[in-house]
Image 1 (cartoon, helix red, strand yellow):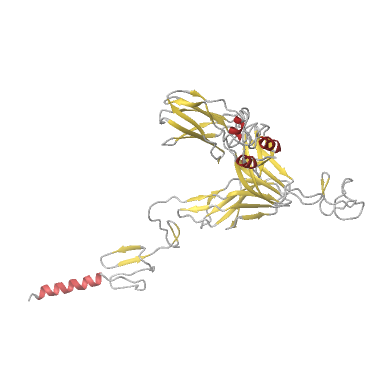
Image 2 (tube, helix red, strand yellow):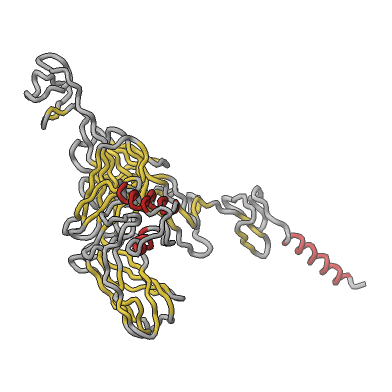
Length: 462
């Protein structure tokens, strides 16, 4: 028997056995190596040598960022975290204070949303002074000066306190709740003897008060935003027209609505451009607190849109035009099997025009829409406008002011007059003159029934 071969085989088995042992986290030293600062692990990482395998797991507070105080590790594929800002931000003014409320933002792909900071400024657009408020959806900012407009933004914070998303700006003006005597605000310590002569409602007795009650505190909602320069903006409350205004030359507008009771309302707003074309309807819920002024800011009405051809010969241009905020960047989308995006700039009056080459489009029906961006704010998309790509050019009808659904007498409102007109034709054959009106402004089935009355109820303005 060859003992040398057996001895060699035995020694090989011994080394294989030794080499296959796993070092434990509580095994600090051996004759061959030393493990410094061992980490108990479950196979998260594997480091090998000829003599041992070190298994470890490194905890992460966020994707790609370790919790160790001694080193930083970024491993795996590069990722791009995403966070959407707080939405439906509202500023409610009080006496020397403003309450900010919002709908929570979101965080994905490794970012964890851990709280919010509120940025405060007396100038629109900042700069802002920030204060962290924790993981809440409302906060009250105190020690403010009444009758000064303050501007606020809500900032998402990640696990490490970094700012990762910013909301739209809102504003509010704190107001005093002290009694008012004419144009004079009482300071709380005055009596009717020391207030001006017309102050019969200051508190405190003495000196000729007439016993009248202090004036009621106004409940008000203020809407601010951007529309179309020098054109109408209409506000609806719970589907009824409540107020209109004219936007300034810079497209900014403000609408105030007072005399409200505390509660939840559904407000909508739309604009009309220089040709009387209406924008899409922007709708949002608002919670109103009795006795305070609520400001809804950052409204950005979508552009209007029209085309110069209802049918365009393939390969020819089709003009896409409308109105938005002056000098804003307009993004135009044309839907096909492939969606095309083009950009143009509105002029000083907010009017934009883009000649789109239809050569890449297949024959058939297509749709186009647009949105606007200015000063870091982006509107929603406009209504979609359809056109046909075919073998000839057919001019589109000149844009006209769109008739309001349910408005049967064309007075811009839906009320009892329209209801009476519809009631007259209920279950009767429609006249030749009334048929086109029913098709355009009701459900278009050639008769008046409960479906038509439901449509009128939905668009009711009173």
